[in-house]
Length: 174
Image (cartoon, rainbow, N blue to C red; front, side, top):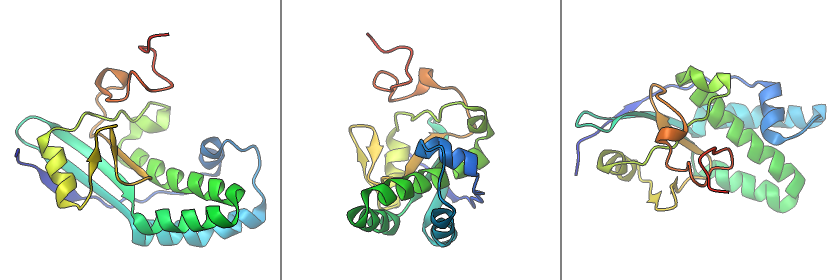
């Protein structure tokens, strides 16, 4: 298996209300719900957010990999069971945490650029295994709230594993 290096990163996402609204697809959110978000945001960022630089000196390059752990997935599933509407809003909160963190490391993402998903080579797959995670052949990792993208930014659709199936793809056959 190819060599790889995993380095811890320290994400510091800040809650951007307008960005959250965009992700949630909402035009308004009640203040009570916003107040309910705060302890979850704080706890998830402090205790459940993981961020790494994965590099392979033998050719794959560098990647930033950010995810929220299983505890967050379980919490959101519980909220979803009680209230699908609330569950959807907390789902959007988790996505906001991960993507805001990614924007901190890859500033181009703040300018509306896509976070392309590369096709991981042996080095990245080995790093996932070391982190106790599994890459699925569909192009996902076994975490619901995760992003893997080149670090630093080096392109969009032309390097993305999902380009043919991406709803924003301009290369998709009609």
